[in-house]
Length: 268
Image (cartoon, rainbow, N blue to C red; front, side, top):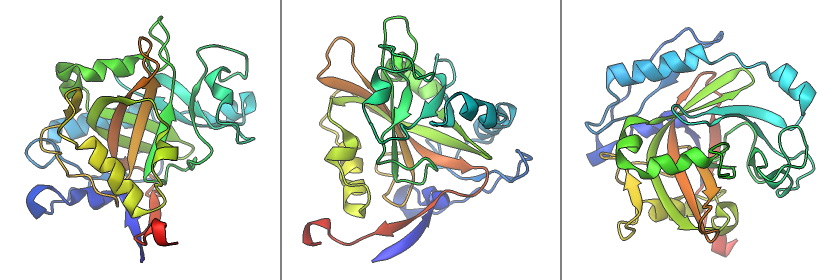
């Protein structure tokens, strides 16, 4: 069985309570609509307003100029109070290893670039957009993800912003933890609801001692939502990776949509 899903399904909150907040904002030439929650089940007005204002202030990215420099650039990611403020690329030839050691100018660089694999869509309409980056000693690229393993920083920095050509997305960070360094897109089949739920089960597994889940979000995200996973290999232990996971709560152009497949992948 297949059904269409829109990001605002995040308003299926704890204890079955359905709450929705539609916010109108002059952002680009479109409306920003979104809904989400904090510990009390709703985003507090001041916090949400701040996120919207930030998205509006940073919404202009010259993608035409960026693509002239590198046609693989499709997005820009910004995480407040970190050095994460970079273009995002996907190798046009399907080489998922290329940007591990090439920068956004396609120059050989051990720091690489911020990139997604070819299995992910550049329109950000997959259930889980997995964004990769290195963690060099100089604090650039995705080194700042380690800050989210500190609970005070985690609590005070709930937003990740992603800008596309003609759109702006806001993700609400609900989890951060260290996991085995395995490829999520290989480990889980996110084209099926089952694969989506399996990854959510990993996130919400209470047995892990190095995991932070935002209060009020325990088991709140479901397969019909949209999430982003920022991933970086740990410098001191390459067998481990740090991931920061956010749920989509703002979609300026209203373009984020997908069809869910509830069939059993093991029987197909």
